[in-house]
Amino acid sequence: MRRNLYLTQLRSFVAVAEAGGVTRAAGLLNLTQSAVSMQLKRLEETLDLRLFDRANRQLRLTAHGEQLLGYARRMLALNDEIVSRMTDPGYEGKIVLGVPHDIVYPVIPEILQKFHAQYPRMRVNLLSSNTRELKGLFAHGDAQIILTTEDASDAGAETLVELPLIWVGAPGGVAWKSRPLRLAFEHRCIFRQSVQRALDEADIPWEMAVESESTRTVEASVSADLAIHAALDMTCPPYMVPVPHDGTLPDLQSKQINMYHVTGEGGQGVLKPLQVLTDMLRSGYRTRLGRDHDFAGRTAAA
Image (cartoon, rainbow, N blue to C red):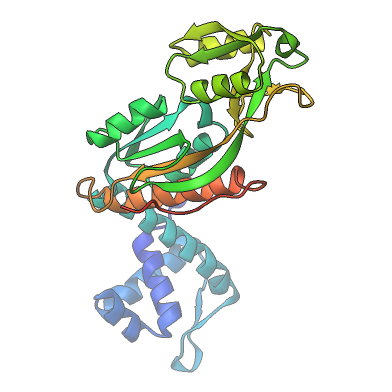
């Protein structure tokens, strides 16, 4: 038959062990000495072990008591953590996070997993869209945090990392050799105009072979070697690779990944988790993507 340990008995046991006596432990626990002594007695009876050596009117842990003390501390710590997280209203709420399609991977899934482990009662709504739409949502108060890909940052934005824009295509693909060069972009992609301008300046003919409102359509077309695309270095999906053009295509300009977030707002119980999430985003992008590139790490002047 399984025997159950009671946390109240373990708490009294730990208090006595740490305080060095029943009297002081009773004061710490706000219990009577007899109540603490009774809980120790019942714990010893449950385990059928002597936990304290009571010789010379002093309480000293026996070998079994020393072994139990580590287990008891861990059990009480886990109990207190559960109670705190499940009952603290300060950890409830919703945060809307907007991230452009093309920089969700590889950073965002890891951050969301880590944040959820720390704040299991907080809900993060991830919106994936283009930079223009995300900035509109932020301006209207429909998102608490957004990331953007831009040439420069607006007032209040923080640049997390600056990455070069690179040509990407299908693994082993040859679409990049075609002339006119076949391109695939969403209608509102912020990279589109700068790519076209770079090709015009290099006097390379091009055509927009694939136009879509869907990121998936562009990705499928590029991975099928029907066209090429441009993406920030280290962010392209596994079914696309950097184009090995050896200088036959022009270099593209760098882009900033910027973060905009509310400060001192968000509703009761949201501000602290909001700050934690922004710290995670800042660290995640600089660590994962800024490893081989310089980043500004600055906040634009208001």
